[in-house]
Length: 435
Ligand code: F0G
Image 1: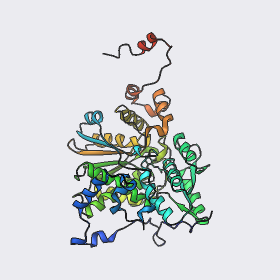
Image 2 (image 1 turned 45 degrees about the vertical axis):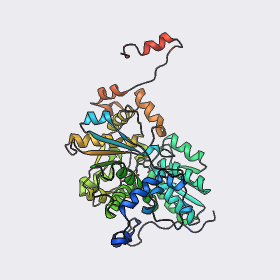
Image 3 (image 1 turned 90 degrees about the vertical axis):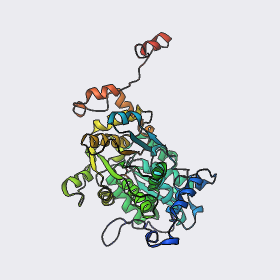
Image 4 (image 1 turned 180 degrees about the vertical axis):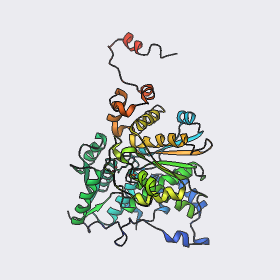
């Protein structure tokens, strides 16, 4: 594996904290030297009509906010970003919130929000001459990394916890040509192994400790602000796993405010699964000052993470924006996912924690009916079809997990039925249901 050098350390050797990309000039530059907010807004919108590859990317069309490459010709893009923002009429009505939307990051090229961060960090790897890239993953990061590495002509190494990721994601890593190692441990164990591997070989680490990942993952904040004509929503709700995404979106909104692109930032709330909730515990125990890792268990495998790397950054975002950090049960996740499905959207279980969390916040009176709320859906529903099928067949949840919610679950289940090959038999299945 010959490459330029070993992966840089992404933590400060003095305090152990993760690095973050900073652009001090944006704050210091005053008057005419300051980027012109109005001109940028115009330019970014114009680029949507351009046929240039970089302009067609929903990440790189904001490249003035991403001065991380020496030469933008090194950018590796699959035309990521520019994802849809959907109104959720049924959930809006049920929750009594008119302005409820879903920003669907599952509509990215490899089916998850990871593409926005992978285009930036992998472009840095390419520009710096690395031949190999690697990540530990619950599945989506590895799918995205393998795809972008393949586009760039780089080799990729994937470490995933054996038996604990959805098949759709594993199939992607294989298809895009990664060397895929199923490790007999959990995600946190994979991270530990990979940390050693990249110290010993010329491989660039593309886990979200890599600050260039967060640079790309901040761009949905720009898209959201743009979609609301630069009046940001009141509240953004994000799933929490390794906690990089919430950190990145917080950074995106903060930078927009610093540059005068928006006047304020939304509240950013982070939702975890009850079985993988170290940040929720940290807020309960010590207001986010310290975090104890947990052994993680949830069927939302994407966020089955007990020792999130970016927890300090995420805690700061929640505190600075006045957001909340809470957890939701397996049944609440399954119900919310089916509700999003019944809106014609669908998403991964890990994404559905956002709706489940909003329902809790609304019940607690933390969200007012007049607020504009955006749920960040992180992954495509087809990533984990097994979960969806198990839910509709009624085999997903144990009785104790369903307790008290049986009726709600039954009302959402739509199992497939085996039917004789006659029109009568088919018509009998919809009898009484068509009006
Ligand atoms: N939703 C999905 C679909 C994810 O894949 C992940 C993380 C998250 C939410 C949580 O985001 O880690 O930034 O807090 N997946 C990683 C992976 C860990 O390896 O694919 P986070």
